[in-house]
Image (cartoon, rainbow, N blue to C red; front, top):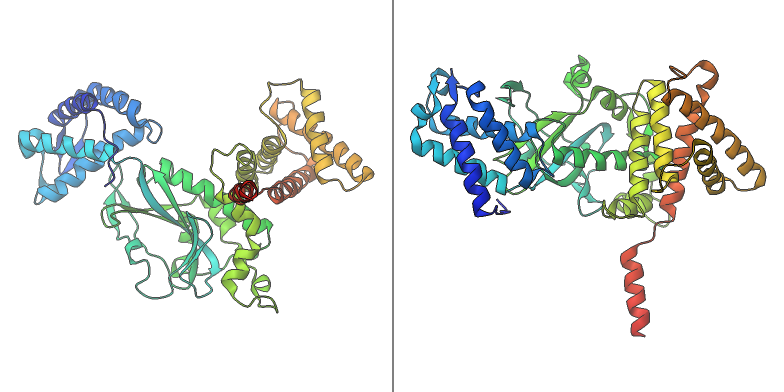
Length: 439
């Protein structure tokens, strides 16, 4: 466990709050109960912990951490836990309270923790390669042999903050997954910081792979026994989260939102672009070459000022494509356009802003005067429709303006790809400059 040691005084304060919380807590048939007698101390603990770990953890995460660590401790140390009731202090004693408090603090010190997050591509068949590295933290994964990625196997169990029954699962053979290494805090919810960060990169990869033609839309494939009865899509496609350092100690099974799962399940790999030619017959190299520009983007740090707007626009584009509400999908595409065409200047009058965005769109995509003129005119109409929806003068896209949804999604995709093509490899440029100065 990597330690990000807390200051000794901060640890003393946290320990005092935790010991007070745990001493007042009860067990009811083995289930931990933080009642009103503990709330005041819980708020104090959360307030102090947020000063130290707030960048990675929400209030609910800090509360859930106490619950999970306490529950795990009881399972490890009490036989027939589910028959046990009473005050926690009477059950595990003063030493148990101190040990449990130290355990919670040690876990807090380990945050941010590194995780592997696996996203299933339900209808994408593997190509017989265990791992295809795209960047340092993004890979395409396939379970070729029985023992590949055995650490991802998650058994059905009772877990979560509310003791819900969690389904089990493992990676299926000969199916492709996107594996993303990320860091932060993870639990069995979709909103934890590590999972959210991985999901952002997953959205970026999917949108870019689709834009580049590696992934194409088709009919949803029936790929598992569960799919025959529809419950896989009802629950959402699985996301496997595994702690990098000690996979057996921490792993979770979460699901994508249903609407996103339905979209992902329609994506198939474009076999035509993986066909060998006279220049290359290695499918892995063909795939990597096909994703050359997306990989350049995905390799850039999240804080890179030049590429952050592009990544933001990509995520809005993905959200727009996966939304079945046309009005919301249209607004999401418009936000994506503003993200990639706008800047950080102070808010401008509506007219000058829409004209600025229209000019940028026209000159970025238009190949000649007439194309630029037409793009500019249609962009202004699009933006006027967006403004009416945002300001409540229009409730939803009507039949007359529905074409703007596809138009906004189309030009957003084109602008994203245009911007990606301009990305330079900063490491290459740096090396070239060093060599030039050396010569």
